[in-house]
Amino acid sequence: MRMNKVKSSQRINQTGEYYFSMRLRQLAELKLQGHDILNLAIGSPDLPPAPEVISAMQSASAEQNIHGYQSYQGLPALRSAMGAWYAHHYGITLNPTNEILPLMGSKEGLMHIANAFLNVNDTVLIPNPGYPAYKSVAQMVGANTIYYEMDPMTGEAIFDHSDHVLDEAKMIFVNYPHMPTGVVASHDVLRKMNEKARKHDWIVVNDNPYSFLTDVAPVSMLQVDTHMENTIELNSLSKSHNMAGWRVGMVVSNPEYISYILKARSNMDSGMFYGLQKAAIAALELPDSWYHTLRTTYQSRRKLGVQLMQALGCHVQPGQQGMFVWALVPQGFEDGYQFSDHLVDNAGIFMAPGGIFGTAGNQHIRLSLCSTEPVLQNAIHKVSSIKKSLS
Ligand SMILES: Cc1ncc(COP(=O)(O)O)c(C=O)c1O
Image (cartoon, rainbow, N blue to C red; front, side, top):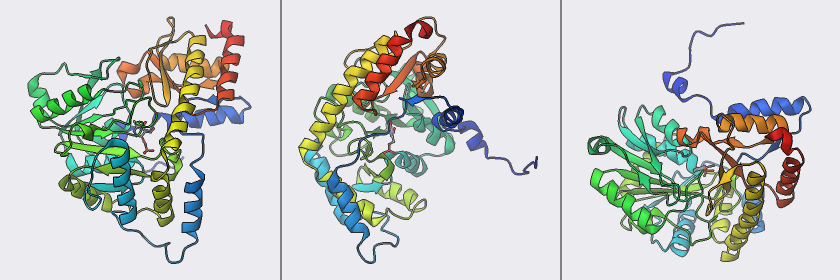
């Protein structure tokens, strides 16, 4: 085999391949060998976007002269629609000219924020458990990461670090409502976070893709930092509008912070396809009934998801919301990785091991609710009928 002389960067060596990228490749091989694997791991909505969104994309794509590069800041009409959406659903007034930047999903926003604000050796606080990309983006720009855990009932951050360490930190990633635990933080918890951030001079980056999948009115970190002095919020149409593959998100903050993020972003991509932007406008203008249907769909699926976890002997903390069920694996298993492998081998079901979200998730497993009720019912049936080999 030819040996390449140039090796990958240290940055990529320490970050490694995304767990799902690696594991799904292995599972695809198993499938090729004839194994039937049901993927209940990934949070990618199975339902389609609203018909209005599809037609907006179709008609916009047929317009003349729209296939060139688009503005780095997005169409003014898209920024206005995002502003109106924030006003209607979160009660927050934003200036679409300079306080909103459309993105191709919130995941890319994390990288832009890291590039825009972090220097080598800066310190960033990261939730444990939490979305793995927070750590990856911090590492990729050479920043140091420190984990904080959360109260499993309230989502309140627990800092067992000295004030000196906390003063050193420049940024904290938070994710309310929280993935993977499904905890929805109260305004009191958000307020405490904001006070803590002011005390230690942190920028709070709230990653907020799940606020429409809860039983309560959508919550935003900006509701407790109305002047956006130290808050940057990412939002996304991936889960709220079943548009994960379309890649539409946004970042909102004060004009100065948005200008830094725009600088970083303008060096990475060259704007978002016009048709997508028109489709996103249609999505943002959907009536409240869209969100009601979405919520009730996930509520019904959640009941089945909890039943499935219970059939597996896992413990589910009550009160969870969002797109996942987060559960403690049964005794007798070393950790969630072992239990996840065991489930693939014995039931042909793939769920995400909690350890991929951080050490505090090691004993957990995460089930995605992005499957229909019949699929979840079948999984319950399957597990119940082969229960002996699963224990
Ligand atoms: C907490 C969290 N943040 C961000 C994302 C990425 O969202 P987007 O599709 O907007 O990039 C996900 C996706 O699963 C997520 O769970």
